[in-house]
Amino acid sequence: MDVGALFDDVRRMNKRQFLYQVLSFGMIVSSALMIWKGLMVVTGSESPIVVVLSGSMEPAFHRGDLLFLTNYPEEPVRVGEIVVFKVEGRDIPIVHRVLKLHEKDNSTVKFLTKGDNNSVDDRGLYAPGQLWLTKNDVVGRARGFLPYVGMVTILMNEYPKFKYAVLACLGFYVLVHRE
Image (cartoon, rainbow, N blue to C red):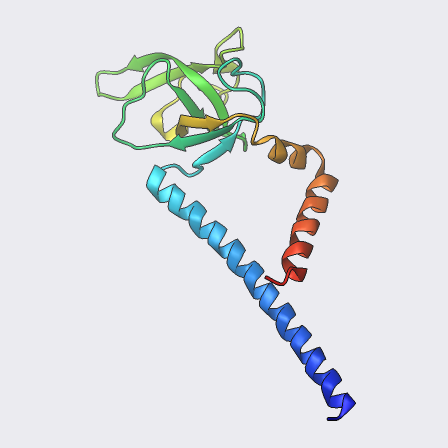
């Protein structure tokens, strides 16, 4: 057997193995995206899982808690319920408790929220001129949580170099791991 042919076989096998690993990585990423989209459909929420980013809801939720949300349109909003909402002009959703309901004669319901650890309601957080939230502002309602699991997300956002290091290590592991 020719030595040159042996090296060609080894080189080809390594390329094939590398390509297999790249395809495996692509399948992992696409599977994660499909799971996320499936959760969106099942929960009715554009963001079925969120991380608590501040201490405004302590002692109910702490910074870094992972919340599981649902947002079914037929369920009415209730006082005392914990909702996640987005305000016009802010990218990050807010997790707070419904403080008051305001029902109009035409059956529209508006509500006011407040963080458990805050001394005032959220009107200062709403868009300019907005005094109440509507169901259209709601991303979801808290149905369950895992304490402090979201701290990894917070660390990655606060320290971008940490995020790139973690992603590089995961990517490297997937590409060189042979199983």
